[in-house]
Image (cartoon, rainbow, N blue to C red; front, side):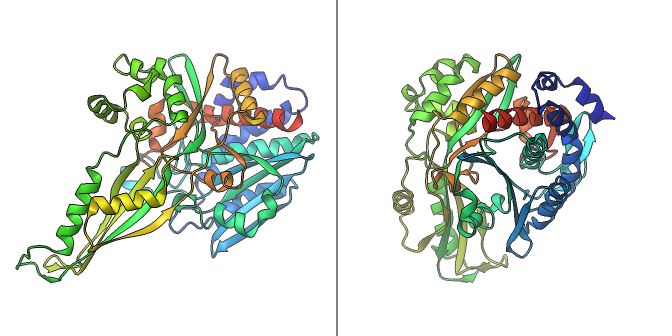
Length: 461
């Protein structure tokens, strides 16, 4: 009943009902999006271990009902990927990309069962509601709507749901590119997670992710003479590692403002408080101001991290017993580098900072930097569609502090954008990887309607 009530209240669908042939299909598929998400949230795809085969079977059920040919293939037992295509003309195709895996949740700190889709207070709660089962359902329903319309498309439209994004994508997007390159042979565009619609007062701003900081995950191994905890030594593997970790985590790497970041800050300057408005407008002039940078880090750590390379200490392993000084200990670092940074040179810089030959630096993972330009037909279509359905809204190209699977496809030369059709207050995005993750019923309806209109316009122009 709640879902039906929100469907009736949805304002965006009124605009879509005026859109010729596909309006009826868009209407129904948007209406079904919330209940489809509720079902999907109850499908176990927690990574680790993943079990994305469960998510693939969920999508396969509805693709089969719609008469759409699909493919499922496992990169490892239970680690499935699924893809389907609506054939079109010869223009470069477009992929709707989403990942099926979700991070674990601690039930103790949730108000609902995180592994079930629960409708409560006009929201749908569940792990993955925002990251990224909600967006996956929005894409899927729009894909089914386009297929049901039977319109002739100017390009192929792909739906691709992958495994393992939360752990780096090597069993998902990375594996698909290596094992099934034919999927992406005539693909020119891709829409993935990474952007968001923010509502501030009466203003709506859609961020479109065009590039992201580069992850460099490192493991520090410190060695020393083992011994009994009751007989402290001058130096041990543990004391060496603690010193190294302190040097790195207390290091403020040189700040710099890349061109995409400067444009992003300038575009959102008017929305900032008086304490930051002028600095955002000309951020490059203020990055050497230590006091300002400290204030920015306290007020907005995400924006601060777009202005320098960063390293966070996240995991440690030491002795298995409290009274044993171990011969070897480990510390893992989550470093995020601005796209102009060289991974090898940065790792060498860390070695100089550590300055200890008894500490080994092992690279766990590192990606190449890549970005997508905004002078494309798809970017303009995103801009015009959001402006049509949210009059007065604006588009802001952004740099993302985290990473997504988009980097795999940018390396192939595929224009990839992080774009979400949902609009909400910033506070409601805080559930990503956190407690009580949720998305509104209205957002699922409106977001699916927006995605459908975007794809309809882009594939039939």
